[in-house]
Length: 230
Image (cartoon, rainbow, N blue to C red):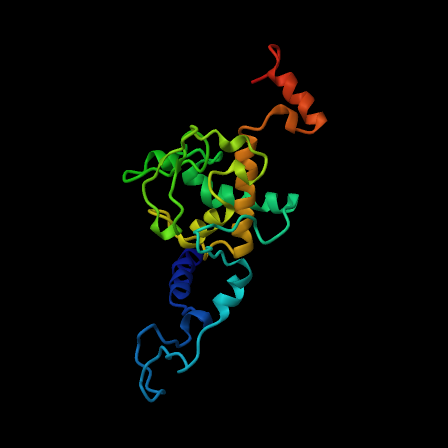
């Protein structure tokens, strides 16, 4: 028994002395801006090839680029068909990346937004939304209240949103004010999916009961009756 008790500390010391042989951790590598004698200029970070232009970003973004017309008009429709699958995908991305600040209903009401000291995240539509002039996303700041109190969300089309779809896509891509760019987190198609869901979300907050399918309409009318739920 005593021999076994002595063996345990010895085994613990032997294990602690073992060297980690994971090749991914111990292999030689060059750090950024470090010297590398194998190159003539002794720089580990290799310069770009002279006379060339990187194309990877352009090839990924080209079919989704949002450009403005001379009269500062934004792209009016996403460059992809609107499907239920697209809306489901957009909802997932919106609730992951956008809702923490803008709220699940995009009304600017969230725990994170309440604790923003410099400027709370704005409502993206509705009576709390503040409109912007028709300039590029990088030039926006401030804004003024909607002239109609922000009640334009009753429109069934893209008019459910106070800005054209291209504006929202550009803000997600470039960032706006205190909001950073989400271009590295969301692919171009995913950004458009967020915009598509945002349109459906805006319309859902002010749509009449008559716009719902018959089966759902009956359920909504029952909830709205005196004996129904909230």
